[in-house]
Amino acid sequence: MCVNGSRGEACCERSVTVLRVMRSRPRRFGRDHRLMAEIGYALSSEEHPPADLVRWAELAEKAGFTFALISDHYHPWIDRQGHSSFVWGVIGAISQRTERLVLGTGVTCPMIRTHPAIIAQAVATAACLMPGRFFLGVGSGENLNEHILGDKWPPAGTRLEMLEESIEVMRLLWEGGQQSHEGDYYLVENARVYDLPEEPVKVMVAASGEKAAQLAGRVGDGLIGTSAKAETVDTFKKAGGTRKPKYGQLTVCWAKSEKQAVKTALEIWPTAAIPGQLGQELALPAFFEQAAELVTEEHIREQIVCGPDAKPIRDKIAEYEKAGYTHVYLHQVGPDQEGFIRFCDQELLGSGRD
Image (cartoon, rainbow, N blue to C red; front, side, top):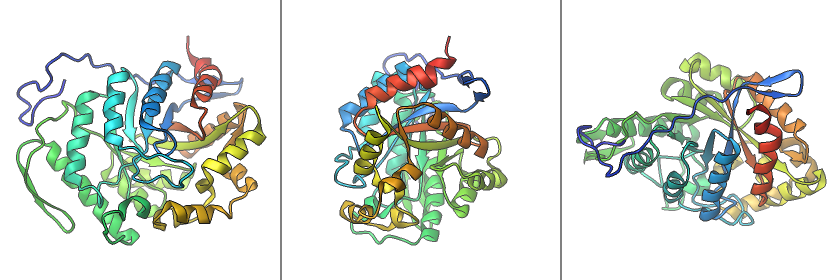
């Protein structure tokens, strides 16, 4: 049940039963490997219209996924992906169509195009609608989304400073009551978020480099990563993240044949093979399309698990586990989300359920 800023009276008119997701039982992959990580599902806002995202969340919950992360973009990476809905509206719809699925943003940039005070209010509302099963994932963003109001795109070091202060602002507002803040990057004057969840909102911080991983360990409630790099997890742990959850995104393309999967992934998600810092620096989908012209099928095979078989996915999940991730969420590239969810139910999730 959500309460107002004073935490004294209920703000919801109807009672809400809090359905908590318990840690799933380990799932046995073959004879020799027992999967310990929780398995989640990625809702790709860039690839699917909002109503479909809600449907995929429902189906994922029914199939046995315990959690999901939904991307928060203003633009898709390339025009062929074709979508980029307002994530907070979609989250509201998902909250009313699911009962157990834990949901987080993967990830929100609470820094430039949206002030952290506004994100604080949006997050608090989402957490009221999904008591005990919503968290905020944050990162330092991409020029692709953050340039739209004409703001200067800051260098990486400045963005991390902004991200740290934005987390401070949001947590201040989640304390309730009237709050003000005057920092290096943000000003808040006599603001109050009235509808607050009963439990504090967890903030997971995305990181790939060393400095971001240190920040995540120091100020975050958990880590979000997109590769099975043990170095990132180790840095996160050393900075204070040892007992905190670690979420790893694994991109796959399941299809009836490996050839079909590679073709789909190359058409829809070639950005997986664009190297270095280009993903943070390019400003338009057209620029990503130009960079993607250099991506080949072989590059796709190196970056995305493609094909109809479960074993390569299982093996890749095991790599994330070995690197130290406690949660792995699967991003299925392409339109066949229903087929992929059925496949997961039968080959990945169903194998460990009674």
